Image (cartoon, rainbow over all chains, first blue to last red; front, side, top):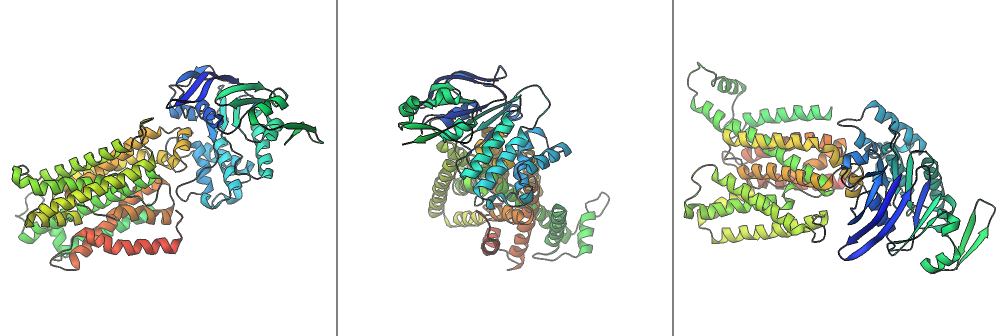
Length: 259
Length: 335
C-alpha cells in the first residue's frame, strides 16, 4: 500500500503539487491523468522519492520513506521513465543487468544472471542482447528499459510490497507498442504485492487499462476513482476543455471521441 | 584477458624506459645497479647512481602520473556522461598551474619556498581553490545542486580565467622565471625523485582503489542522474567523492610534473573501443594504459633530441592529437 498524505511540492514560490492526498492499493493499475502542467510527472517523482515534498508524507507499507536510504529504496521501488539515453556504448544485456545493481555487491551472481535471462526472454529482447543500446529504435529501447525495471523488482521473497512507477512511458511508442506495453504493465500490476502507479496522456488507454484513475489539474487532485467515475463528459470539458462523446464499440469498455 | 595483456605491455614499456635515454644502460648494468643497494655491497659507481637516483625514479614517476591522468579521465568522463571531458575540465589543472606560476614569480620575492615541497604544495592549493571555485559558481540558487551542464560551462570559464592569469604572470615575470613557468606549463618529468614517487604513488593507489569501489555506481550514472537515483545511487554524494578523488590525484600528479594534457582524454576512448564501457574495467585499464602511454611519450621526449629532452606535454599533444582524431574517424565512435 502506498499512501500520500497532504503532499505539497514547491519550486521557488510556485506550488507544482498542492495538498494532494491519495492512496494506491497493491494488485491494481493506477493511472494519473491531467492536462499539460497539471503536475503528473512531478507527483510520480515525489511518490518515487526522487523529489522531496516540502509538506506531507509518503508511506510505503505504512513506513515514511523521507529518510530511507537510496540503496534500501531501490530494492523495492523502480521507475520507468519517458526515454533513457545512454552516454556510452553499452550492450542491451548490460543495461538490463543494471536493474540488478541494487541487489548485488561487486559482481552479479548466478541468480542475477538467471533473472536477467528470464526477463529478457519475456520482453523478446534476447535476440539483441549483445547489440549496442544506442543503435536501438525508440520502441526497442523502451522494451529494454521495461525489462531492466522488472529485473529490479523481481520478487525478492519478502512480504513487503514492490512499487512500480511509470513516468509517461508511452511517449515515444507507436499505437501497437503502446497497447502491447500496457498489456504487459497490466499483467505485472495484477500481482498481489505490486503497487503500480503510472502517468499516461491518452484518456482512452487510461479508460481501458486503469483500475483506478487519478485526475490532476494545476497540482490539485480533482477526482479519483474508476474510469466511469472520473471520465465524465462534464469533468473532461471542465479540465481538458474539449467535448467528449462516449461510444460503445465491439471491444471492452467505451471509447471517447473528442471534438 | 585484456587487462593481463595491458599489464604485460606496461611492464615491457617500463623496461624500455629504464634502459634507454640520454645514456643507455645494458641489462647487466641495470641488474648490477639494482643489487648495489643491497647491504654489504661497495658504494655505487657514478653510472649506477645516475640510474638509481635519476633514471629509475623518473620511470616509476612517469608510470604513476600516467595512471593518475588515465584514471582521472575515466572518472571525469563517467561523471559528466560525456566522452570529450578530461581531468583539467573542472579547473584542477589550470588552478594547479596557476598556483605554481604564482610560486615561480612570488616565491623568490617573499623568500618562501626554499624546500622541495613548496612548488607541489602551491600547485595543490591552486588546484583545490580553482575546483572549489567552479563548484561554488556552478551551484544552483534554488536547490544547491550542481548540474553537469553548469559545471562544464563554469569549468570552461574558470579555466580561461586561470590561464589568462598565468599568461599575465609570465608577462610580468623576469626572464628565468618566465622560462620556468613555460617549461612547467608544458609538462616535465625531469624533477623526478623517490620522494615524488612516494607521494604520487600514495595518491594514485588510494585514489584508484576508492574509484574502483564506486565503479558500479558510475555505471548506473551512464543511464542518467535520475535513473541512477532510482537504482539506489546517492548521486550528490557520488559526485563529491569522485570529484575529490579526481582533484587529489590530478593536482598531486600535476604538482610534480606540470600540465600534461591529452592522456586523460584519449586513454578512456581507446579502452572503450577495445573492451566496452564498464567502469570496473575502465578504471583498472586506464591506470595501466595511462602509465604505458605516458612512458612511451617520455621515452620519445628523451630520445628524439638526446642528450637534451623535450617537455613531455609537447610530445603527448603532438603525437596524441593526430592519433586521437584518426581513431575517432575510423571507428565512427558514437557521441
